[in-house]
Picture 1: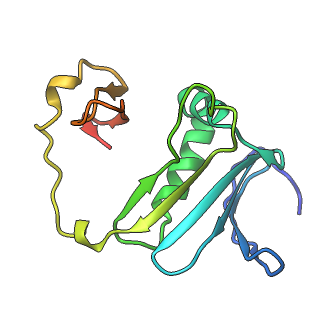
Picture 2: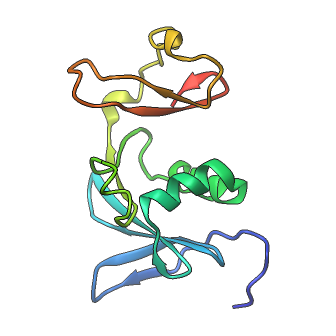
Length: 149
């Protein structure tokens, strides 16, 4: 297959020995998926090497082509609604391979977002940072068109 500068997403099929499916691939980035039923685990690669969380967040911030590819990966989920979770991250784990899970969440199908609940945390920034209710974690949430994602 010829490589081009234009981004492509293709379904390549399963790799039986490991039960992994390559679900999205460009000339730079690849996402592999494993899991069945209501949970799917994704691992991200850049030039066939594991993409670190540090690189993931840098690319999301600075590379529009990557952000578009990653967003499409999330939008192409087979689930109507889902929980999207990364493993817990600390400054020492940013060098580990980037991965996340999508967990089917039909309970969210008919819910509407409460756009006012976190409005005070937004000051025109692209990311909202605040402590969780237990005070033991600081979740970061991207802001898209004024809404918490």
